[in-house]
Image (cartoon, rainbow over the protein chains, first blue to last red):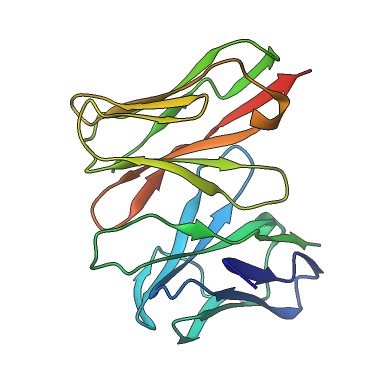
Length: 115
Length: 109
């Protein structure tokens, strides 16, 4: 595997379900990100991890819970979501926040539908 | 709050035509990136421009960073159906990337 991978690619869940999104990067990067992409809106940054430490949480509701066990893996745990949470969830990585290189490499995304 | 406005939001042209899309802001960015996103995939980085007035070329794509580092343009020469996609600009702001809403480009054969 190369680059940034995400699983699953598609997910349909009810509002009472609990599910997790997984992201893995094979680029040797130290920063990882979760973004939400909705129709007609700019990419919304949700969470940032740098060297496994969460450095940013952009006022994301607590029904989204990130986890970063190491620099290569990032999870987004979902519970009691709302229909308006339906979107494409993108994971990205970059070298690290301190290097100044903000060039980010994205995974293919998970298309989430909340019913 | 730093914002990036892209125009046009939608563009549909015939194969072989030229086009320019724009990315504008009232804020200064230390660098600006362009990404292309195809359906069902994540954005792919095309180029990063850093210096005011900088011009970079990637085959038929020409990227320019404004002198004041507040705006950028992407010009495509002799567009091909493979250029179809969502083009996103992203400016490096304070501690994070700020994305525009994108230009959805369709090239018709």
